[in-house]
Length: 310
Length: 174
Image (cartoon, rainbow over all chains, first blue to last red; front, side, top):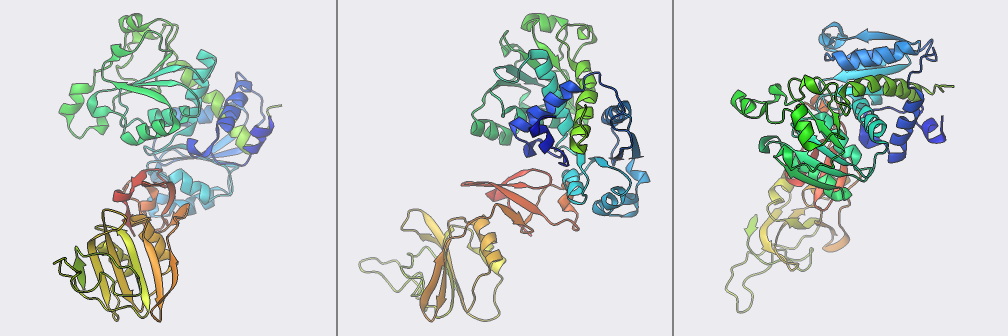
């Protein structure tokens, strides 16, 4: 483990805003060492897994990471079985749970719940998603996949396509990418444009970006297309959803027009944004993202717990 | 007493939005007595004086003079508040700074300005601002609010918990 990686021992992973560029790179470098690594270095360690709202993918991915390293988990996947259903404060729940485990994983519908949990515990706390705010291991696995597929995190042309207004994943990744030097393209319907706050941040950090509604405004030398599901549940008016739901359906024909060297990413689950005929396309990286999620989470848990892979 | 559209005071301890009619100018002005003890808050952003008064509360005793939309020598308009027999607390100064970061505070004792200062915004603001995000964990009354000052001019603060950024006009005091 490098010296900067060692600095991360005992830290919480709550928000990407809490980490420097070097610390982010330390997470990614360490994750590379955990590719296909399965030895019981977490034996005797228990992860408290508190899912106050359901999440199949993140829950399974973390559980897989722990079990592949010989650790165990305890907790709940439904808030109805926790004492918060009886009116217990989140802080009290955390103070109780920290007696039972070595690291706490929390997913909560309230934004800031993971931060509050971290302040209530002496154990490392990992945010597995707090409402529409942060989901830092998703952002780390996205960065990891970008570097894996393109060999670098700088000098890339990266397009974000779809719901740029509500997507937590997109917001966090765009913000984190300001640590690096890339050109950003923002493709969305007018009603789903990225909030101006994020554009102010891009301006403040000197990141070059452009906005457009037309998918085919993308130049053929774009390196990455990161597309997201347009979330029906975000629309108060179903007619507005109908207008935009198929705005950016990407299929093989679309990719042939844009370029065949492009890496295509999606946080999943998809509905129909990416046609299944693209699943064998060489640049399709969305299932690799899911696989990388386990690798990155293995590294994150061990780094925060101070467990050296060797 | 509320005064509107007058000229600005020169000495915080003397008549504040000052005396009678100026020479050759027919603008009527209301005379305000000099302050023996108390606080003058000058250079408030025009339109914020009543919000500032809400922060301070109206005292049971002592005169309160408010000037609204006064011409400022620095250009534009400003508000001013004079409060008799009342000195502001550091916490009140922090709250007022969020509304009007360039305000000046003069503490008057025995007709003399004993201290004049501009507020400095702290890096962290505890339990002064309400987070307007209903999905923020600090919407639970058991959780004290905390904000970080992300930018001072124009003011932008960020909720410690939900990380939402608020501009000055969105800030709501507890």
